[in-house]
Length: 253
Image (tube, rainbow, N blue to C red; front, side, top):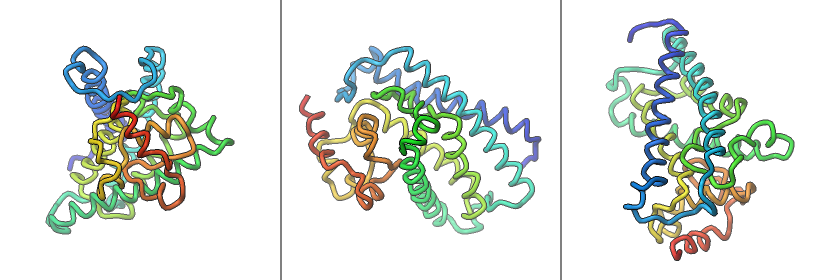
């Protein structure tokens, strides 16, 4: 893999991160919030139409977040060039089976990190400084998925900077995790429930976070802190007991 300067990586990753954000979040917003979206069955979670001013604030925070993530990604590549990380390029080094295992493992680690970080951010002494920007709108849109205050963006990015020194990760696996994070975050902030009525009660579905689950968090603040999974919420008592009822109410509209 070619070795480039830190500044080169910064510009490349900044462009790639912004492109990913506008493609996935912007594309999703276009589908569900424009005339094109009327062709799809909608089960809306919003209490009022999105305001341009709120979207503009989300965009501003997202661009700043992209700067932070680009700097951290450039640092990761620089450290990889020094051969001090556990990133690797040959899938045969650990076997093809390990690609899937490490993918799931990193998602679980990230979800755990995110839960405790997120719950800490909601402490009254920290919320204003670390997380208020993300909650500026009580009804999020896909644009909100990457809208973080600078300290929060840095703390989130630290996970990826750290995990590459601990867990052997193929570049394909790392990219897959980043794409999953982006798509899942957009889904959580979509403002429409896409899953079927059986989802929150299904033996598998009850362990995954969806739009309604995360929408409740944006309104109540004191529940639902996970990113992908509901495990920690259930284990530590931050799962809203009315979640299934609220899910049903959405589907009856």
